Amino acid sequence: MQQEIRIGVIALTDSAPFVVAQKMGFFEAESLTVELVKQASWATLRDKLAYGEIDAAHMLSPMAIALQLGLGGSPRKEVVAPLVLNRSGNAITVSKSLATLISGLIEGETLGSKLRTAKSREERAMVFGTVFPFSMHTLQLRRWLRLNDVDPDQDVRFEVVPPVRMVASLQAGSIDAFCVGEPYNSLAVNEGLGSIVATSNSLWPKAPEKVLGCTRSWANQNPQALSGLCRALRQACVWLEGGADNRRKAAAWLSTSDHVNLPGSVLEMALLATIKGGTDPFIQFDGTELTQDQRPMFESLVVETHALVNSTPLDAAQFSSGLKPFGF
Image 1: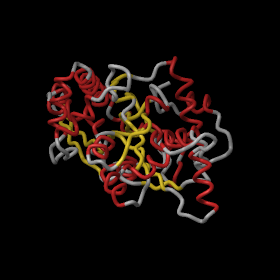
Image 2 (image 1 turned 90 degrees about the horizontal axis):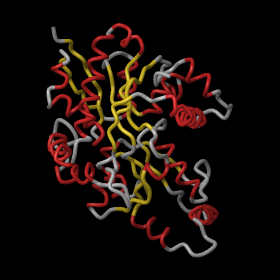
Image 3 (image 1 turned 45 degrees about the horizontal axis):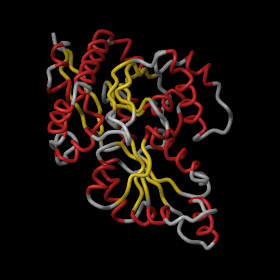
């Protein structure tokens, strides 16, 4: 007997494991009938998961932590994230004018010093787009800004923009830069609107980007379905790591209006791009649990997520051994 599962997804390249598992029959082989429900924003996806309108989700890893802690006005929910779907895949893209400012810095100048000088003249503060407050995108933006002598809490403004609207917002001038998953960085570069200045690999190597997430109550009520879901997605991740031809097929599937709805050529560029100076794909699909050797990295992620809204230090070790969203 087939079990029906509704999974919330966002129109991004790293939703590929769900699309591949559906197209390749991996869900069906596990006696699962899966409906992929495209969501307009991460906030909508979070709320629908919390209130049971979807069963599982293509989830930002810090979102799982935020839900556990009840951060950002969300209901506090016990969640589990049994699989890391991908690592890497984000980039920071800046507008042409900001790229010119950065390239024009002279000795003794920093991006931070230039922005503070502009602020002292009461010029408009630069606006950085992020997809959700509790996301690797926000944390990576803050890391990049600090590396460039910019105080992320004082020198710039952050604005939440859904991934599908990032490029249009950059083009309209309502934001000056953004951090987003693919294919929207590639799209901005392809359309001559901006330049990529950093990738998630350079800012936080091997950090979990997207995870499979569900509430603990759903997991407890549907243990066989969750196990089958994990097996299907793990198989999809292995398939995506199987070479360029597989990724080209995935790009064609993702390009349709049911999914990302962008030209296959842009999605191919996103899926086949390699890390600068190497041969590994920019986006790496995982399909595994976090292991004990990755606990320090996870605890750092917990601390930085908590610090976004609370200056009181959090005992990350207690969090990861108690609530265990990532299975430690």
